[in-house]
Length: 112
Image (tube, rainbow, N blue to C red; front, side, top):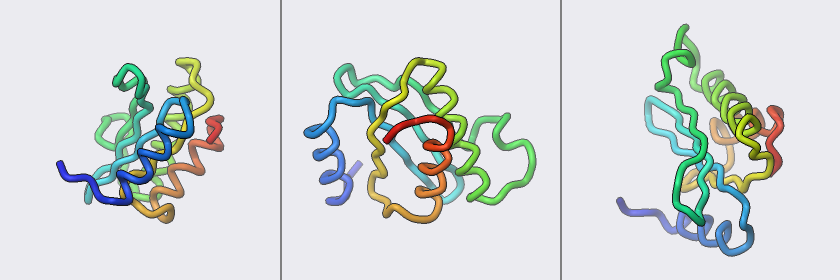
């Protein structure tokens, strides 16, 4: 899979500057995914996405879904003892759904 220049630049800076776990976000046309990754070991520690059954019970807009996923990833991270993360927005600009997810994760207790 080909990474964009923005994505490569952001990931390089995140890995170079910090040794925190990385909160990575991906969105497709239909779904939103968030996961906390340990780059030293190369494993996913916590994840949340819009394809999980309990998150998509009723009809919701993408903005409402992004807010739910942000709070869910924050809750799961805190349960696993992860409080400080580095936010990896990937190839996306920091606005819209990505910003809503990040703000909800901050409100849920994550620091970035």
